[in-house]
Image (tube, rainbow, N blue to C red):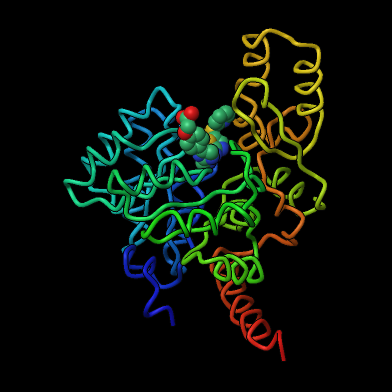
Length: 315
Ligand code: TUI
């Protein structure tokens, strides 16, 4: 299974499924669970202080012998520190998001780290490939959190055409049908975020997980377009008030202050009214809380079944 898959070979994993590098969510417990289940677990550096991040790396190494990754959020003021920590601990795989990966590639490629930028346009994918990226994650705007403008369905094939390195599809993928569809578009791997938020091993507050499980296809909204940082999250009082601030043309400092600390409130305190419940449109596909290994097995089994059906489509 997957013997000729370039992502499996590159990352030295069993299944070409990587976990999203979700700020506040993607910790050592979740990363180890995903890696132990044959995918690639990822710790989100996000805005974590250096010592906390080092602890997470040491912890994941104690919980799994398999490869794992770290995600660098390039907008973060701590991104440079996180980059040095990735180098110091020889983290096997680094993904980047919310900005350009140039300095990450310059620093980590010479020491043999596999670097995979998460991008939301074909132009950035081409640039990342020229700068030496090993693969790219093509993240469509169905995804949760900070997003681009192009949907997965049209983004993935255009990025597949634009680069020779393998493409991992992300945004809107939560089950085997999504994986099969991504491979039909030319992707060689998938990144899954929202469904792993609802894994048993995720330390996210139960209120947040329950809200995703209850969500339907219209449950998310995008705020922050006016600030230039569009973010997709489950609709609640927070997103409604955020929209009102944007509509009335409130100053960007006021809006930023209003948004500050809301993701932590959702993840840690379970504030489902005023927290930022970042989630993708695939929330409507997530039906239960279950172990990460069951999620991966369900996705693989579903993708195999769907691909068999697809092979008979013109009979
Ligand atoms: O980065 C993500 N998703 C994220 S980051 C995040 S933390 C955050 N919270 C509030 C506001 C902003 C960030 C939550 N979710 N996904 C990968 C991704 N990268 N999506 C889009 C991009 C991206 C955007 C611009 C990549 C490159 C890029 O370069 C252009 C530029 O202007 O820097």
